Length: 169
Image (cartoon, rainbow, N blue to C red):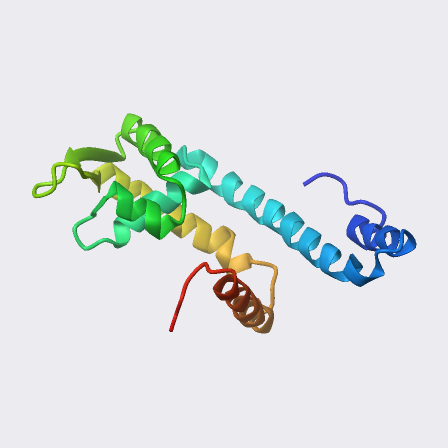
């Protein structure tokens, strides 16, 4: 992180919105902007922890997902759906992880149109080590109180459901 600013630029933006006659949307603008800035801060922390492992967060998410699969393998299209990213993004991540010998690709044994992604032994080791580092250095030191974490999960869960991100019904 750089040097902290002398005042909150998002609060200043809210005041500017209000001064320009947009008071009815000033608070939501500030909230959304604060979420976006918080995401940048958290992603920077995560990327800093993952850098020594040669991973980005997107590649780590794929390794973690594969490590949770019973067989350590998933069809690429299922990985794309579970990670909620475009298939091209999964392909790019797999390309990089394959070059690093952390995953392999193979044809699906019963569906010739499907490609399986599988963790290698090294991929499993890197995933475990990266997860331990993230748990220790980011998730265990989130900067949020326990009550705030539960409230954020609740609020964002409602938003995501209403946005069509999932249907728990």
